[in-house]
Picture 1 (cartoon, rainbow, N blue to C red):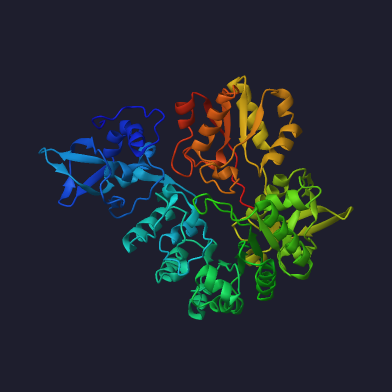
Picture 2 (cartoon, rainbow, N blue to C red):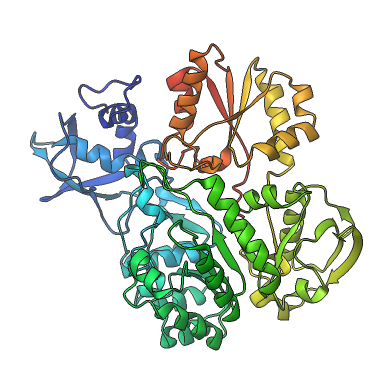
Length: 580
């Protein structure tokens, strides 16, 4: 079924009507899987036509229970991401010839929309989160482009029970978007939902919060549902700064929250965004105070902004980021817990001579690794007799051994001296030091990197493609690792025409330079610019970490659009997302 006036190809027009035209061939297939509703009840579709313009109301078409979330997978995933837009853009005619205004839709057969998934109670608990009670001036969501903006949503008790039953059988329907500032701790439904989750799994639960809603009563009850881990987004403990920059009307609560976490025995970490309006002296003071109040580790998330947040430059990244790193390096010897910089890769390139080796970025005090003598700055050279030559080797080996609950023997290099140490796994150590979040196996924090197997996959891909002018896409952050791996595995020698291209994040703009935030249109713009210089590639290889399992970017656009818009073949190279 194709709307009247809609063509099968959109050409170069990126307007909503053009997007609708691209989706139109799949609309008939989609409507076979959903039931539509007008204000008068169910509608059996006999025909549709495109509106000449958007209706005055810009709200999304409502969803029946259980809720459906945008840009998620399904049998007809190719148009599900645009479903709400389509239903606002079309007028539906029923079997009697009457045009109906569509206000909602639901599944005909819910089983057709399910997918297999590893059990993750943290995803499930996000569905009952409440609204954030502060409004940070530097909240990253304020810089999101319009297509990524989200509103607070909370599912019904009926839907939660349905999703819980699915999760208990390793299935899910439409996961909620992670681009949200929802706060689990502000919701009265958190504890009942957590108790329901605990009836089916004892998997670790991780709660992100700004801390202002953490009361003694809540924390004492959370402590009964362990293993529970909490990360408190502190940013600053200065009352004036919290009032001015975070609009926190009870600025003393966050320190009380950290004290209560320590008293109730819930392991926790803190995070700090050293925004350019926060003095480095305050960053240092907040870091010291969090460590003194029992934080297991402290994450310092280097600030950035998009052009949608600020069209003009707010600060110079290449000045502020090194200044933050140097200040943290100065206080680390005096602070008892690990201080981790995100993105960790930036600090490694900036601060370590042997940046390519598996280096320990921090060790949780009291953890098995700490008791065994592992310390920050140690280079991991072998694990259980297997040599480690690359960051991903060390990080991956530790994670695999922890997941399989194995003992660990390590060879380390510290200040030119070789050391050996061992860790015996015991159930006593499993909580809080061996959490299944894989960020700190055995209490060790390391920086992940491109896995070496990706280079073998790249060789196979290039051999099969037989391209004359292939291009491998990377980012400013990952460029050095990518070049070294290409050299280490002789990829450049085997395929001498392969180019490594650093593509800017034009969709987000500002000072964003992460490869995992690239979108399809960024790549299309790069290819067109190359063509204008007479350097048009015939194959573009994209790291899969910028796309979901269905090959769609953050805004729901398939990477296959690249070939449709430019004529250049695009393929995905399987790589994992690097979050450390």
